[in-house]
Length: 252
Image 1 (cartoon, rainbow, N blue to C red):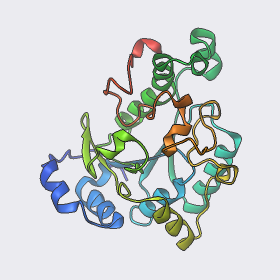
Image 2: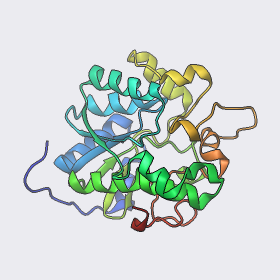
Image 3: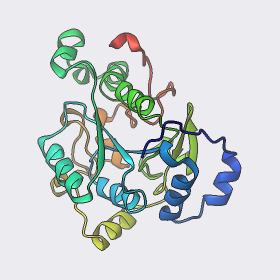
Image 4: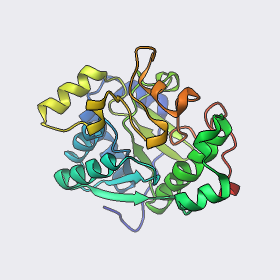
């Protein structure tokens, strides 16, 4: 899918959102493919509902690079789920990891998720997630990034438009306005699986040490992540102080 030269179109974001805000998810993906061509990538966490975006996008752009950040701390079920979906959908999977192995990181920085501190969690997220993603986008020469964020997941995501920009990369959110019912109907219509942890009460799952099942006290899905200290891991807002304090390459 990659050419020697990838053009970087300049968009009028306000105009683009006015034009495309009400379009169906599939139409937004088609627009992104037509607009960004070989510069278009997508990301997946192989989380609870990952099959929706993976199927929706690859039906339109079958060979799109699919970036998966493997933190080294994912549940065994996630790795098996990823293998199943990769084969089922014939994904052009691009796996990226931190240059620090989990063992080396723990030796140098400790078990950061146990510190019950936002700065420690942000350091963890930078090492294991943000740096690998930044490297992936650079190496794949991405100009636009499709992501499966939904506005009902976090306070921050409620503020998003369907087309935005993160640094020099355009971000497109085809299912931003979908709800849980939309997700269920899509999965059912296309005979797609949930992550196995869905049957254990999880509505979102990341690393084994920072995810838990939904409880009656939770207002939103992402309350079940990061010990309740924050809602975002940093992949989608690495420059935002509230969610990504102390993101610095010196951690590596």
